[in-house]
Image (cartoon, rainbow, N blue to C red; front, side, top):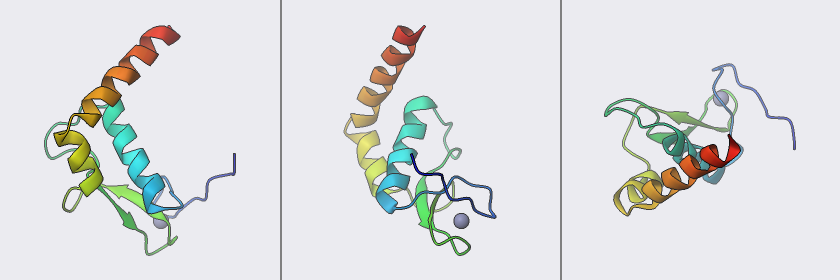
Length: 87
Ligand SMILES: [Zn+2]
């Protein structure tokens, strides 16, 4: 795996919007964020020109869709099983 670029913001760096969105959805499969907390979308950084997650702004459409159509629920269940099997 290629080494990750780093950024002065200290945030995780994603090379593309799609990768950042994948990470955004993955964060929701691991954590159940209380309303108003946790990342909601991705943005292009002024410092590193890569993508980061942010808790500010309108919700990312892919995340919103995954939340409303049950995709995230399925991902969460799959992740929970994976954790059980790894024990
Ligand atoms: Zn950056």
